[in-house]
Image 1: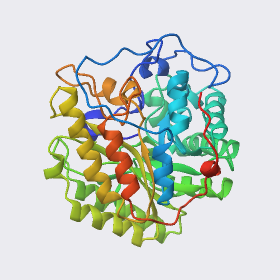
Image 2: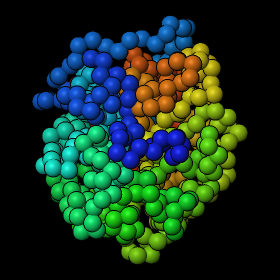
Image 3: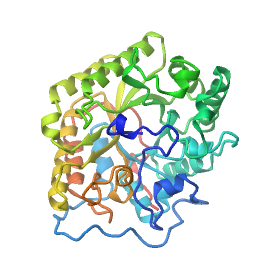
Length: 426
């Protein structure tokens, strides 16, 4: 999933970037990926003992919230609001209830990745985790975004480089397309949108396509178009998404967003010219707090979103969070600065009517990939999300809610079963 700097976080075969943090039993996401037991049985009824520890004490402004306010505010403007989640997080019944209450859409963070689906080359496909996360969403009238049909990460420790890079073209085709076909067929009609291709573009690539991917090496660039055709054939009503990061600001390595935008538009144009059923661009929107107001060029970003919309594509904000480097360790000061990043970004993004969904990458600091993958040098816990690790709303919640309320109205991409019903928690 999203990365703040490609050069700093490329992990071909290791754990995929997703929520970290700790479960109520003290498990990290990485320990789960390395074999810790996931859910066995009903999600909403199983609870691990204890809760995560509180953040360091400090006086913080109390933020009031009404259950379900986020998705309701979004829906009034034709938007769907939701968040990513994984089965191991939803073992925490308190967090499961929050997710069910606030999110009208669930992005499958871990449970359709290969470390769950096919943990070794010899493994049969295991849909048990996927069935649980999709079942949770359905029980709570949440739409599902299935992630991902093709990605070069998320395999876990059961795969070696040779297992992927050493394949012949036919072996690679059988492995990738056979797995993707089985996955799409298994959830046909139950997934509102598939992330068909995740992180396949690059300014340093060929014609905008990344080349440092095993599937590109073994199959060739057509693997991207073929995965979209495959998904459309087996789940024709699903929205198919090209998901990418790095569109917003210059990162700490000096990578410029306009280069990523140009490469992505080039890939989109190629796919559309070939008649590939690409329906939406997923904008990961992992935002860098450090000097965001100075680095975020609102004019060029608006133009980029308009350029995507002009090609007939919908836009989904898929993995929104804020990396709080460069901000004070003081939680009160930091929370206000993170909220300002949310506000500045969403006030621009939601002016584009082609944006149909806003998904945060997790709802609470209790479960954020940034704490494990990108810990702060000063040791202060990361605070990138609308709720703190005690599931209390922060200023980022206010900023998010206000931006959703103020968004320009638009025609919705989906219909919600829950629009007149109350979501059921854990």
